[in-house]
Image (cartoon, rainbow, N blue to C red; front, side):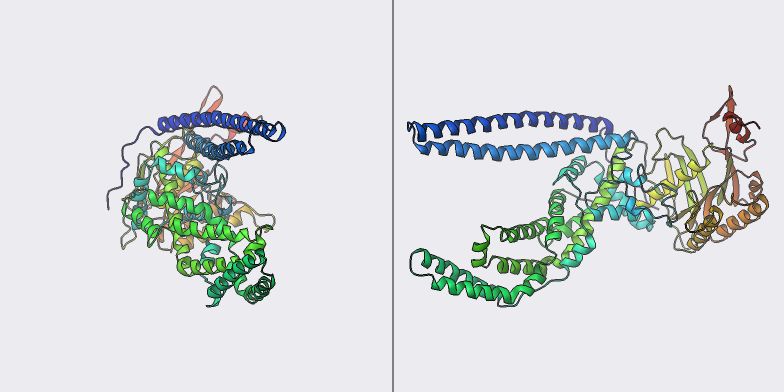
Length: 602
């Protein structure tokens, strides 16, 4: 057992984010004014140029050389205008970044971030049950990644528990990154206002498969380029065009001979170069950040050695841009004579030979840093959260889950409740209660906080201690008309999957909602008891909700199972819930009252 990391002292996140948002709004306003001024200046210079032209060519009172002055000023203003545009776009993205952070604090983030729908999998043992992906889900609350590899890494952490030492390492890195608001803002606003859709596997495969050109390519290309220059000069000075014609024929033959090798080298270059352009900006920012925490420092070292990855990627992007010049109709003849494409293809081949094998490592490091940065933003923004205490599982696989005042991270004003299951107490908590009293939400609250804990994030609780666990749930089991499966069949299929998971590397934490409610009470009583006891015998711990009070009778077997409940009260004809978990079995139901409330005569 080790101490959980603590965050450095930091200003109130809401106040700091609001202050920065106001500052970025003011910067946008200043740049709007600068934009208008520069635009007026360009108009004035253009009018002045027209006046000078009229005076020099019409009235002939000025020399035409005076046009140089407005031309130079106009170019300078155009460059300044571009800079203002870029700075204003960046300031606007900063406004969006801070507005999104405040929205997450206020619980109004649904639809504003990355929902992660592509990671949703109905067959996953808990992702749909705990609302990990989709609008308003946990992934949207957390994710601040700019690249697909970063999104994929964060999603992978949420979908599978990690070993204790790995989770502790993530916690320390998250704690070190949490106060670095400047870094997170910079990563959010760098580059164009688009996400870098880097296909990590494709780009890594491209880099790892170098395509060399024939050895003599560069010497021959240089010789032909020099000959082309000399022949062109000879032709322009009136010494005849035969040498130039000979060089053109030789150059054409050379290009024909290299057509396939060049195509192999440049094939697929355009997409990786475009995708790596934003990545280079992110890498440059990450390389500059002083990171002392060992895990972060090791990741940063992978980006810096033997030379900064950002500079190496920028070199490839520059080569790819110059290759495109050869497609310009005005430059194409010059490029042909200068052997532009073969020489730049040779540079690409050298780049892939020198750096291609490192591309996968760069993408992996960026994915890791972006996932950690996403968890760090959550740690910074969400008040009342703590790092959980990770307990060693030990050879006997003694599962433990103990928490105080757990709250659901996706619900504003959620009522906190405790949880105690594991070897130190009951292994299973049977939760009974009336409709809408909070039973399912309680299961989701426990489950989503366990997912956060085992991903390396802070949890929404006053305290949480747990061993590694494999969550599994039946909260969103649905029937399937297309597959011809009833809800009951889908549930027992999932229960079999959970029983298999219980034999995995980590003890199962099962979250069973309204267990077997699709069958009759007799079969439900027998089946539920057998399933729960079978899971416990395999070392699992968990929570089970039910409306069937007969199921509560299975508790009490040597303290392995215990009862708890949620209840309600009828006040002035309305049903009131306090969503507080209490020990024991619920004593009444609100079903009849709800039926009467909607107008049914019962």
